[in-house]
Length: 115
Length: 114
Image (cartoon, rainbow over all chains, first blue to last red; front, side, top):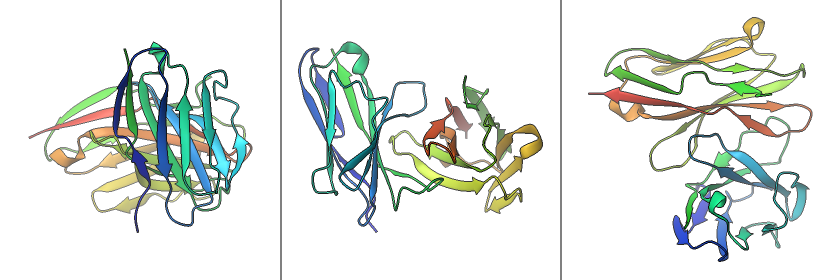
C-alpha cells in the first residue's frame, strides 16, 4: 500500500514570495492533516480536513496560509507571502476516518527555507 | 502548559546498550490515546505504537517495548540491544477524546554509536 506522498521535498524561496505544497494521502483515507514542524520542535497542527471539508483550522495563520482539498483526495497548502519564520518542515498526514485516537500516517515532508 | 513532556533532548548510547526514552503526559480526559513515532534523518514520521488509556498492559515488539503507567502519567519506550539504525528523533504524542488533536512532545534525539 502506498504511503502519503508529498512534493516538493525541498524548497528555497525569498521572503515575500509565494510557495505551494502538495499532498496525496493514503488511498481511501478520509482525513488529511497539515502540520508545521519547526527545527527542534514537535509537529504542530495547521489544518485538518474531513473529506473536502475543514474540521479544524484554528492554528492556521489565515492572513498568509491557505489550504484546500477540493475533491476530497489530494490537498495543497499555500503560503503567500512567506516570512522568515515560516522556515520549517511541512508534514502531511492522513487517517482512515478521523475518529478520536485514530493513528495518523505521515508523509516525508517538505523542507522549506525562507531567505 | 505542555501536554506531552519529553525531558531528554538528546541521548547517546553505544551499540547493543539498552536505552529508555521517557514520556510524561497531562490530560483531564479519562479516555485518551498515546503514540510513539520515529523520525529518521529522511524526515518522515514513522508510526511505532498506539495505546488507549484503558489498556495498561505493557507491550513488546521485537527489540522495542513500552511501559504505560497511568499512576505516573508516563508512557516510556525502551529499545533493547540498540543498533545504529535506531538513530533518529523519537516523538511521543497524546490524542485526547475531547478535541481529537494530536499533541506532540519536543522529541528525543537518539544517537547509537557503533
